[in-house]
Amino acid sequence: MSRTPLDEASIRARLASRPGWELEQGQIVRTFVAATFALGVSRVVAVAFAAERADHHPDITVRYTRITFALSTHDARGITDKDFALAAEIDAIFGS
Image (cartoon, rainbow, N blue to C red):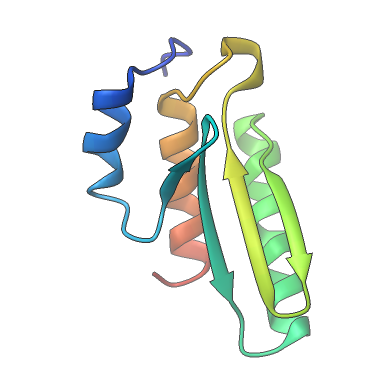
C-alpha cells in the first residue's frame, strides 16, 4: 500500500465513495453517533485492534456517544491509501 500522499483531487474523488467522511485541515474526518456510550467505546476498541494490525493509528475523540476519527499518514505528511483503507474498516465496524 502506497505511503505517497494523494493530491487534493484524488482525495476528493475517493471521498465520494466514503459517505460521511470529509476533508478537514489535511485529514479525512468522520463522526459517528452510537446508541450508548458503552457501544461506542466497544467499537472504538475494535477500531484500535484494526489500527494495530494496520500499524496505522487514527486520532480519536470520544464525547459521550459521539466518536470522531481523524486520519492522515503522519510520516508521509498527508493523506494516503492507508487512510482510506482504515476509513473503510472503521465504516465496517460502525456498520455504515
